[in-house]
Amino acid sequence: MIKRNVFFKAAITGLLLIAVSISMMIVGKVTTTGIWMPEGFKVPILALEFASSNDEIQRIVNSISEPTLEHIIAATQIDMLFMIIYNLFLLFVLRSIYTVTKLVQYKWLAFLPYIIMLADLAENVQLFNAFNHAQVVLIILQLATWIKWFGLAIAFTAIGRFLITTGRYYDKVLALSTYVTIPLGIWALLSHSAINEVFGMLFYLLFPMIIIYTWFPGITKKV
Image (cartoon, rainbow, N blue to C red):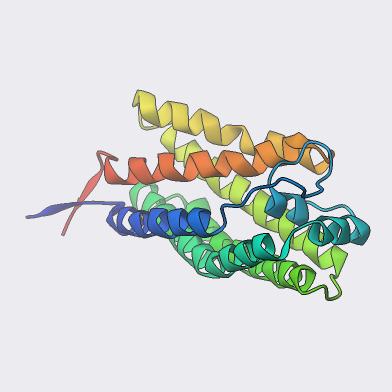
């Protein structure tokens, strides 16, 4: 009987996720010289996502040169594909954990990526409005942004809860890293500073770490 990695679908999707992520970073790479951002922010797109007012959004967008804005818009367009792939990856990971543990919470947590994807979509719609100097519904942008980021924090923490039980050093380090996401997110929610960017950028570290795990989980199933 052939044995296959339980996280096989997630592992393959993870490679696609890396490819799209790299393309988005290449397309969206811009110089921030001359771009106004709130104190503590260094990444324009994150400054817009975590914006605290419409005036702040307008000030950021108006300070971006036309060529730079075109790069940011192109990267956000790629993000429409990126959000589908990263949520598909999370879905496969959570479903695989349910296959291994049979814990019902992971069965229900598998619905979380759908919520995150809808929030990300709503967020992007508002960002495109900002780029086109159209009306941004701030409450929708803020709700969508925090639902997305806290949804990710919950999903990663749930994955970490599984990893802490597997016994390997790498798994435990990764698990402990995921446990930081929710407290950091609460701190970011109550703040409007560099901590917001630290919270967002943490996931750019956790995603590749989990992708690596899915390729070498040490868990197989008969097929």
